[in-house]
Length: 222
Image (tube, rainbow, N blue to C red; front, side, top):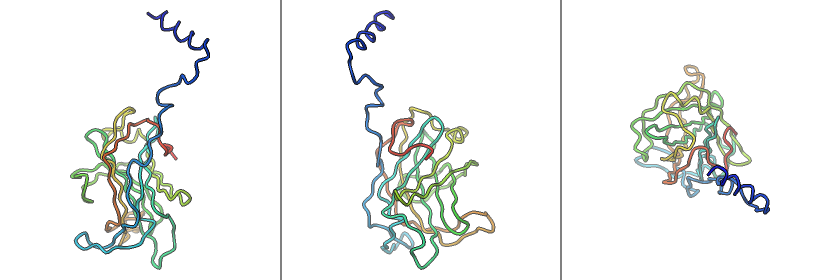
C-alpha cells in the first residue's frame, strides 16, 4: 500500500498535473463573519436609547482569527476617527467568541489614560444582552486602532488562554459578537488605565463560526 501511494504521487508529478495543493490553500479566507447595518448607534439607558450618529462606534463587521501563536479579533466601524467631537473620545470595543464551554472577550479601550487592551472569561452571558460577569486574564492584549481600515484589532497570545480552557487549532469558535460602548467616567488614578461606567452604542451578532487556524482576512498577530 505504501508503494502504491508513492507511485501515484510521482505519476501525477510526472504528468505535470497542476493545482495539487493542501485543501485549505484553495478555500476562501473567512471574512465578515459578523455583519451589521450602519447608522444604528444609540446613547442612553437601554430602556430609552437615543439615536446618535457616531461612525467610530458604528459596527459594520467583525472577525476572529487564530494561528499557532496568536488570537486576534477585529471590529470594523463605519469611520474610525479621533478628536472630532466636542468632548474627549472615551470609547470601548468588545469582541466575544466561545471556544468549547469557555466564552472569551477581548476589549480595546480608548479614553483618559490612553489606549488599553484586556481579555476576560465571561460568566452569565446569554449571547444576546450586553450584561455579564467577567474574570480578567492576566496577560498582555495588544490593541491596534487602524484608521485606514476603520478597524479595531485586539491580539493575545494563544498560550495565555490555556489556563482558562484555551483555543485549540482546529476547534470551532462560536457565539461571535461585537459591541461598542461610551465611557462616562474614568478611574485612571485607581486603575492606571481607561475604565469606568459605560452604556452600549452598538452591537452585532452572528450564527456563523470560525475554525481556529483557518485562513482569515485578518492576519493573526496583526
